[in-house]
Image (cartoon, rainbow over all chains, first blue to last red):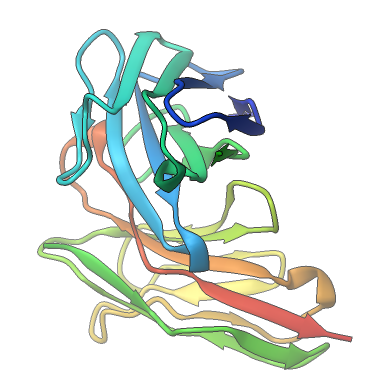
Length: 118
Length: 115
């Protein structure tokens, strides 16, 4: 149980275009999802907390207008990288808490999306 | 604020060697502690967790004990295999705020096991 599906796994896009990444909880409802960005040498940075039915909470230094997050249902959150540039190339990973959901429940992660902007 | 510090890698071991990856934390309250593993090209998977002091988490031969006195949660395995090669992340979650609590990760430690 507690499977998180992320799509696409890889995407290549041209500079200036937008890319949407989907994160779905397949067998549970997730009122909260988290979006991470992983940099070279594996450092994992929390970008934002996605809340179903309300605005996402962004971490300091993350541009909310560049990284648009929508959490329209209890099983789907999307991250859209708008006007992508080569420096946005990275590995993006979503996660959600399984049920019952509480502070000490582990996060379940999607398999990540490798974004390459040319 | 809360933080997690992990030993830097890469850690290179021969098969059947003993593994220790150090992790210490700083937190104002009594956090829950986790170890996650990331295999190449994949997302993170929960390896084990401990939610209170002196708890020992264990899974797949890996163990870690929540040490409040030393604020540590070191990962150990008695005999590593090539298939254990991966990046290991230590993380904490404070015990406030419920389900919206975010995980704070260490920088990750790359383990490479050679046959």
